[in-house]
Length: 125
Image 1 (cartoon, one colour):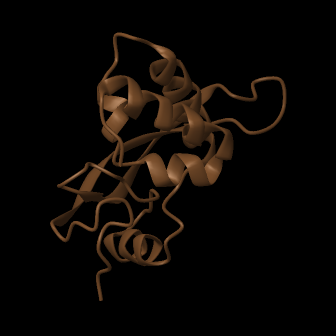
Image 2 (cartoon, helix red, strand yellow; image 1 turned 180 degrees about the vertical axis):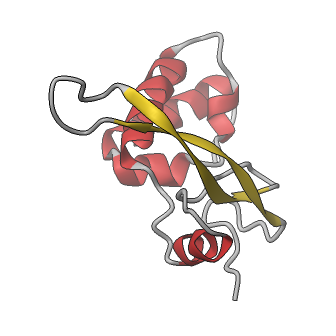
């Protein structure tokens, strides 16, 4: 069974293959790239959400269906970008962000920023 996208509810899903860098995890070279491996992940073709990386299609689908599809480090980085964009007068698309629920779930302090952006754009929910 293939569950729909947890972000947009889309059912148009696909599997993408590519290479993923691998990094040294210990010692003086920690954090440096030491090669690449083939990696696979499920992608939503509606909103471009991506699931966890795996070394097989089955593993990618299992991880997607397990709903452990959020890379916390990437989400932390994205929340910092969102915070800056929500405060910017030049960025309007944040008022209708499809990931607002996920972002606010991760950092509740973002909710007032989303609401202020909607009000500044001239609409509410």
